[in-house]
Amino acid sequence: MANKKIYQNILKSISVKEKLLAVLIDPEKFSVENAARFFKKVNQSVATHIFVGGSTDEAHATENVVVEIKKQTNLPVILFPGDVSQITDKADALLFLSLISGRNPEYLIGKHVRSISKLKSTNLEVLSTGYILIEGGKETTVQRVTNTQPMERSAVEHIVDTAKAGALLGMNLIYLEAGSGALKPVSTEIIKKVKAEIQVPLIVGGGIKSKQQLESAYQSGADIVVIGTAFEEDESFFDDLRT
Image (cartoon, rainbow, N blue to C red; front, side, top):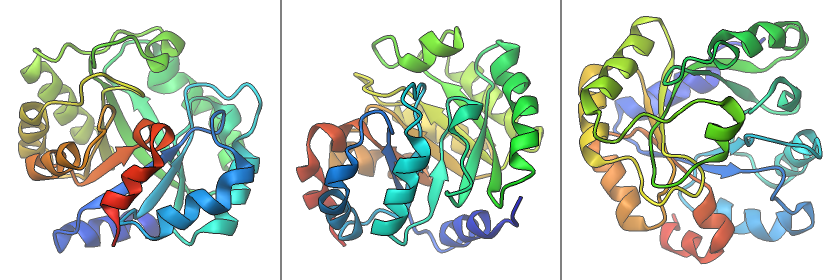
């Protein structure tokens, strides 16, 4: 397992108030044939990171997708795995996600233990991440796969306490997630209050489908915003995010 180069770069960017944008690519939905055209837009945008992963990958496409992405961009490629099977040494780093909003032991620690034998033989930089699923207006794949309920949007203090607990447990990152295709993004109130209580970088994703929502997340305290479904549905969104 590699050193903390990517994490240190994230911290450095935050220290100079640079806002980071991760493009989330679901291997099951990504067309390798269209990769060159897609990444031409990515490389002309303000995107700073590529996240690769999904709740499922029944076609075992993750590694092939990562290999193709590495041909098309110099941006760091970070795995966002739904399962141990999605780990590949072809990426640069791995979000070591613990679903701290739920109480299913498999997604709190179980799968992590099973991943170690595989991780030992990689050069992946491992980023410990407290993952918090928040109700976004519809049932998500994460909810179904992990058999956990999202935290209610109204339970702001409970969400804040959960994020704080994750940070105190030593997690490198806290990730507030409304879920892929969420009807509503994580609220500005939640982002602000979580950010006020933690000293580690804050990632926010799910339901962000406009530049206004993106800017709102940044202004509320998000250090890294993740956009996936919006780009899948309308690549012209990149036109609003040119460098």
